[in-house]
Amino acid sequence: MRNTILAAVVAFVIGGIATGALVADAQPAPPPPGQVMEGPGAGGGPGMDGRGGRPWMHGWMHRMHGPMNGSDAARPAPGTFALVFRHEDRQLAPADVQKIAEAFLVWQGNHTWKIIDVAATPEGPIGFAVATPEGAVIARFTMDPHSGRVSRQG
Image 1: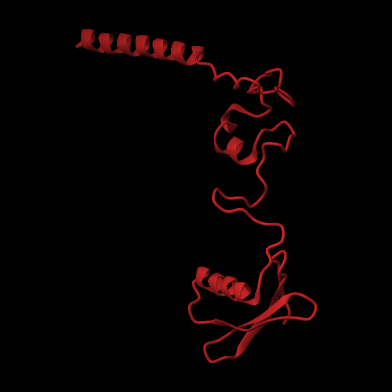
Image 2: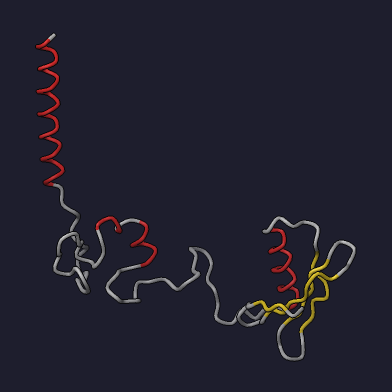
């Protein structure tokens, strides 16, 4: 019995030493060729990865926020998505505004309210109203046809 326990402890210690040696020798991958090392941590200070971030930021945070050297060159524009490009001027028509407002209601799980009185105003924004199934107006809004910004009117 003692020999079995002693053999198990020895195997555990040897396995732990070997694993520790492998972990201690592990190094992060070198940066791709041509990558400029700038910003804080460029010298590779303690806990730094040479790109100005912490080693645990190599994953999704680094991909989402781009390099942390102050450069916005590799950073995607806010609101971009793989297949969707957001134009500066959205050129929305009243029919587009109605679809957007109806889609918002459905997205929020509201299948009973409806969008009525969709029309362009003389000032430029497109006005619309949210109403009950019976037609009683709940609230009025305008949407800027260029930016898509919604403002409540009443």
